[in-house]
Image (cartoon, rainbow, N blue to C red):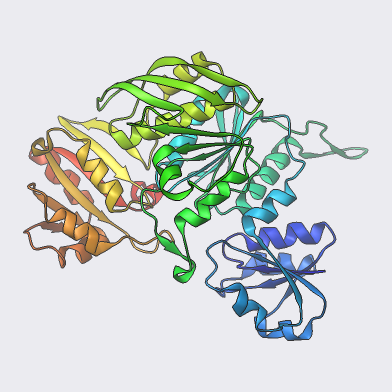
Length: 472
């Protein structure tokens, strides 16, 4: 059988090489024409043949097509290049699950997806599982924790499904260095340094997780040239052994799903498996009283109870993420004291919601490559005394596959009774769509200077990679 890997931009090179190492005949189609350098050389070394779709006419027999879930081609379009082939189709997520089928069966594994809150939730889980030396893939990098210390396996890495395999492979190299000694080469017998794994994914999950956490469908944006959507892609979460999902998302998008272990969480719906009985919001530490009933666990048990905790969760959308994390841990049968202590240690992460004081000004930053109108609304709504703040909104283009709906954002901003400062390329474009007067700074640093000069607090919302902003 031939295996055709489509898309060498979003992890296809890793998939192709992994399959070739298993002795499979592998073809590759560079749909975005981005292949170069070491990646091209590696494909050549492992005998992966680069083809154009027109060359499918030269093949006979079985053709397994391995495609990204957001592929801008339909199956019919691919088959049209040679209707006589016997086609099967596997998503990148599915092939990663196959490649890791026998991996780490003895440790807790969590896959996290959703439209918003993924990275935040991953690092909440990290705080809870820190004693298990977690292995992590997130939008902030591939990381390994050993005795509480962070080891950076790879910083610039996407959350494409293939990079789950990449993260596992990088961790293996760390644990198993090849040591040269006088008599030859000795390979370490230490096969693993981690006792848990947490993987973030933007468009669904692979299904290797003991628990799949789906945080929300805050916006059901289109993918694959409008032939699919975020909600359809994230349906893959139900491949996991146990699923924790926002109840509103389950009711709105997946009411047809049959699964033995589905647990729900909600800010408002007491019919959920886990919900909030009381919440006291604070920009530093929010207090929660949580109840949970008949939560199905990975070990076929059911747990019920209540717990009180405090953590950094200044707005309702943050609290919703906390609920998903707590439910995930209960599903894994993690002790409640570990949950409470871990969340108490969580203080936010760079590149998501953070709070700091500079001179006499409170600076709240939302710097996130995935910001959309709903996320911006939620960030603004968490500030109770907005009149004490400058509100700055801006950002960069081309940082994620999901671009922001500028018309929708402009319509919302026009309804606000507060002064708005726009910045960056996104701010410049938004300014042209607003009917209200605003201030514009090309350089976002001028916003900080203005706030400090006038002794004002600042809510800084910027759509970008935090690393790019922090390095300027």
